[in-house]
Amino acid sequence: MSFQSGAKSKKAASVALLTVATVFAGMLGPMQSFVNGRLGTELQDGHAASVVSFSVGLILMLIIVLTQSKLRKAFFELPGHLINGTIPRWNFFAGLCGATIVLSEGISVGFLGVAVFQTALIAGMVISGIVCDRLGIGVPFKQALSAPRVTGALLAIVATILVVAPNWTAPHMIALAVLPFVGGLLAGWQPAGNSEVGKLSDSMLVSITWNFLVGFIALGGALLVRVLSGNAEMHLPGVWWMYLGGPLGLASIALMALLVRGLGLLLLGLASTAGQLIGSILVEIVLPTQGAALSMFTVIGAVVALVAAGIAMMPTKKIIDEHPELSEINV
Image (cartoon, rainbow, N blue to C red; front, side):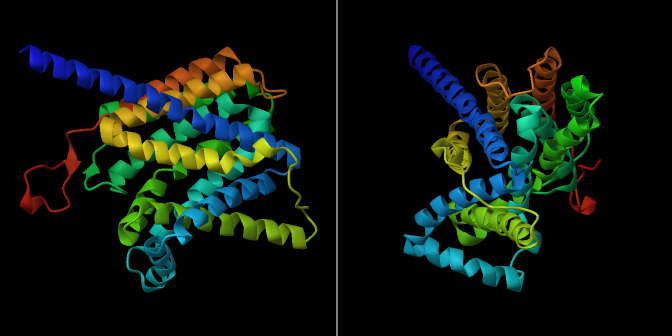
């Protein structure tokens, strides 16, 4: 009996330690937003900032992948799979979601602040997760809409309204807050696409590298058009830490991949979301964004977003069966 009690205590302590580690890993998201936001302000061009961030992440991943023969072979086979349609082609373009988020960081964080940005982003991700579950994107079964999930979606909208409330008299600020919200809405299909590419290549490292490549091509191509048309100038920042946006994103992905084995998806999602929101508020307190003071509405909105995420992440017992003749579970 004492042996079982001791084993349970060790397991509880292990889960608690992993949960704390996940909260800290979640804090890397706000740090990345802060770096990319400052980079956008430094370059006076959020688009250029997103290209710098993506390029650094891509270079690091290429160094890892191209130096290993197995990974290199799998990576160079992906264009052929895309052309042949080995898996639905949309899976290969999931990197566009990450590009949207990083682009919105460079454009809007300098004006909104990290806390508002992260709350709007998470609110969009909550709604995206519910919709993706309902449509069966990235999950084995379609999950029906339930009262808790609808409540989570509504609370996510309330959270977004709360964080933008202080800016009702500034329409341009509202427009900027829409960017991370839209990025969050697109985020649901990114892990689904990356997962399928990872299965195809038998390596998530290859999938992540492809993700960065797609985002870089999209952002870099658009910036090149702007430069050639005389609507933008490309120059690099002179401050070393402004190049850390990409590495911070990679560190977050790597830590989540390790921690999920000990926590499971639900607890990992809740702890990482808590880390994002706590971290965003701490960043705003320690390193406030010029002209974007932390308001009580933002704090309340962050709490509401966390509650919304907690409710929306709870699995529902109701699934939608595509083949009713094979099962009695129907909604």
